[in-house]
Image 1 (cartoon, rainbow, N blue to C red):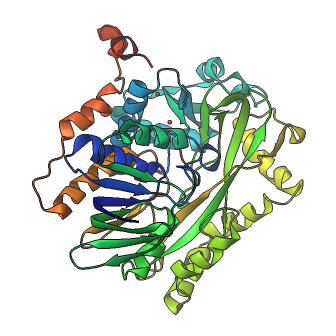
Image 2: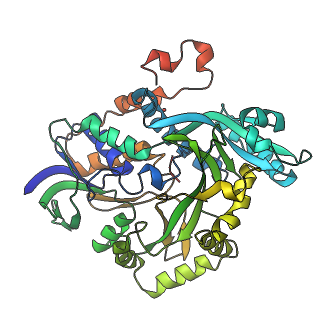
Image 3: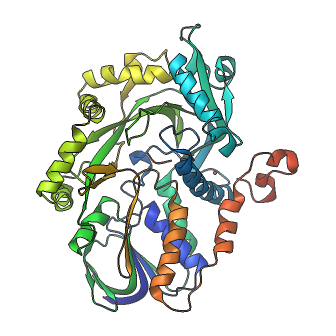
Length: 467
């Protein structure tokens, strides 16, 4: 099989699917293909068991700067708007309250400063600072069992979207798969990509595809492919596997986050209901470093070493990162959480910080939950580069998108669409107004209820997570 396209997208998770949706629906690119190695779309990190199911706005993520929160907020509003418009029965998401909780004088002072002085209260109009009595009204189990003299503060918002990103990815593809010129190949592993000067030749198990431009959105494997093509030589990965504990009972009405430990690139421990089963409460994530690009797949261990590089700069980078006096104890402690019985006993205090009355017998390691989040390592600076990485070549993009990549998938797709149109150098146009009308314009703004009929009534009613 030989097929010719203007664009080939490698990877059928939330990132690749959102780009396919944006290109096929809002540009005049006529021939585009998405190629996915698994038999189903979104079967790896975008699957609902493999991420925190959170739509990150930056409002309760206390490791975000105000500048990062401004960027992430807009991206999250695009996803929320899409869900509001396309998921009236809430099959892909649920929407509940969410809050970040501070306990004790030091944490309360920190959270108050963030809300007032740092400007998060101004950036997020729906975000309220609430005290013990109001917290108890929304989340009674968060307050029950605590020392009544202990100070408490929470920043709370109704925009607590819990999302099945795998189903959202499939929804993106379903929106466009019947458009002429759009092809979706599953169960089709990409073996190599060759730069043939005026086109790319994508070699797969099923044959060759040729493309004028290519975007690789294959998670950790994006950097592996980039390195095979001579890009990103100064980058490596620190693959972090996330897991969860769960209680087989409905303990929380929404999401409850704890304050983020400074200098850590991993999500703060939080509790919330599983997106498809409100009677299960998940607590996590834990985070351990693993030498593999996919959780539980030994076949991806050699892939990790392809990315690692086995060179002095990589070893020195890992040594420098893991020797950090905050990160090293954290990594070692997270290894303990996988030990039967001992692990949940060690993790229990984190659960009790959210719900104090939970006892050891109430929680178990959640089976089948947890994916790999690739943290970017810069071997030049011997440090972690927090967040996502995009490598731009001549006619090709490589995207590595750990959290909050799912939350900003449409924003990233908009950015990449503009780059693809530039790559193609023809009379191609991106209808950005129509794109925003289909996404962010459906996001319910503060005060909308007071201004007239709700958006749910104006459109067909209805609205998301990651790590």
